[in-house]
Length: 152
Image 1 (tube, helix red, strand yellow):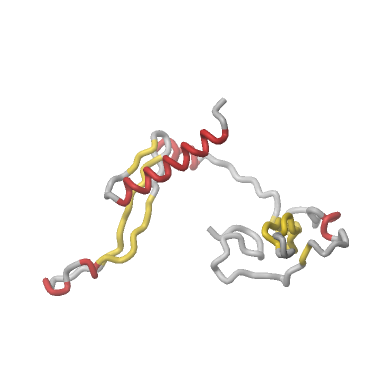
Image 2 (tube, helix red, strand yellow):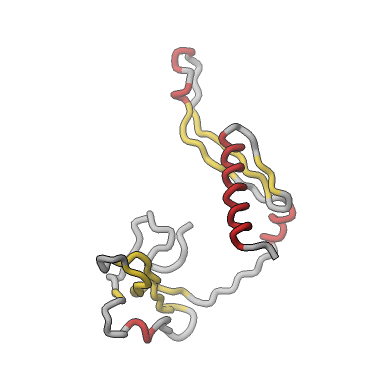
């Protein structure tokens, strides 16, 4: 068994190497997974005075899966347990001033069976550590919007 600290250290070193290789123009292949590589948005021109670095836009990292992984992904079967809505949060840790530093969301099942409340006993524990937000919605920046699902 590999110690957790050794594994985490190896992953940090590996990620730093991948970034270094990508930023130096190389692609990085992971056997049985796929290849990381960079692309760049740019504009074209026929005028020599318009040519140069100003043509380059932003860089993007691409990761197409290898053939075997892509085939496995096509065979994946999905099962929907339900659709959940964030109805509040439970504070797990506070700093010295009492400000929440870590919280856990509380979900309510809204589709796919009877409406179930997760952490129901924690919602009304009387110590005001839970909050109930408005019915939420998403402004497009949150990867886990409050209106259920995953925007990613």
